[in-house]
Image (cartoon, rainbow, N blue to C red; front, side):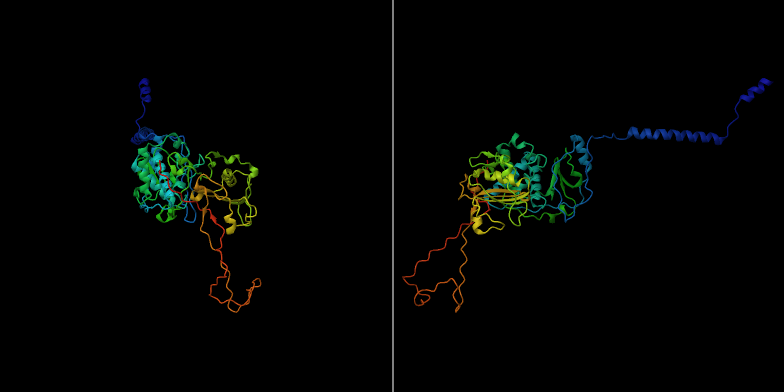
Length: 462
C-alpha cells in the first residue's frame, strides 16, 4: 500500500493550458530571433570593402561671384571593376542638357593651324582613333576655352599644367604618351578633320556644356562633386553644378593667338622653331637649348620702377650678354608667376623709370617677354634691328610711323612766340610760292615697336 502511494507521489501533476501555451509562444519567438538574422545574412548581397580613400563630395555649389577652382587630374586607387560600380552609382542629372553654341576659329593662318593641331592631338590621345569619342572630347575642350576658369586658347586649354607632372588637365600632356607613340598618317589626318570641323561650326550636342570627363574604369576625386550629364561609349561627361554649368557662364571670347607648344613639334611643323611655353627651356639662335636654370641667381633682377608690382620687370641688359640667353633670363626672372612682363634695354638711358614707356623708349626696347597663363600665352620677342634672329616670328613688329604733332598756329594778330625769329626784310605775301623758298624736308619720326607677334606664312602640318 505504501509503495503504491509513493509511486503516485512521483507522478507530476498536470499543467494548466495557459502554461503550455506560454511555452509554445516563447519557443516560437526564440526560433524567430535566431532564424531571421541567419536568413538575412545568408541571402544578402556580398559587400566589398575597397581599400581606397572616400569619395570627396563638394559641400556647396560655387556661387556666381566666385570662380570655381580647376583641380588637376587625381585618381582614386581602385580596381577598374570597382570603379565601374562606383561610377554607375552616381546618377545622371535630371536638369536640361542644352547643346553648346557653334564656334568659329579666327586669327592668323598659322595660329589657326596651331589650334587645329593641338585639338587633333587631344582628341587622338584621349579618345583614340574613334570619331564619336573624338567629337565629344573636342566639344569639351571648346567648352573649356569659353569658360572663365580656363585659358582663352585651344592650345592653352589642352596643355594647361603640362609643365608639372601632377598638374596637367589631360594626362597625355605630362605622362610621356606623345613621346612613346605617334599616330599613323591616316589616323592623324582623321583627328585633324574632326578638330577642323569642331573649330568651324560643328557642335556635338550630346555632351552639352560639359567641362570634365573621364573613362568609366577610373574614379577622379572630383567626379562625385559635379553633375553627370551624359555618357559616350566608356566616357562619362560632367559639368559644374549651379550657375557655372549653365550656358550664360560660357561667355569668354577667344584670344585669337595660339601659343607655340614645343611638345607639338613632332606632330606639327607650325609648332617648331620657337619656344613660347613659359617653363620650357629657351631656344638659342642655332636651335640649341639654353636652360633657364643655368642663369645665376645673381643675374635675376627685381621688379623696378615707380608703380610697378612684382609681376613687372624693367631691366638693363649687359651689352656683352649673348642675345640667345635673353629668353632664359626672362623665364628665370619670372619664375612661377602666372602673369609676368619682362622689358629690357641695352641702353640704360632709354629704360623708363615707370610705365607706360614713351614712344622713343618703346622704339629702343631690345627684348620683351610676356606671359599670361590665364590665356595660355607666352612670347619672347627681340628687336631685330638690334639683334639678328633666325626666324622673323621672334621679331617685334614694326608699326607704321606716327607723324609728330604739328606746331600750333598763332591766332591772327597774336604776338610771336618768345623764341620765334622775325623774317628778315618786308613781310612776305601769304599763299605765294617763290623760287627762293628753301625746300622743307619731311620729318622722319622714330620707328615704334610693339609686343604684338608677327604673322608669318603658315607651313603645312605634317
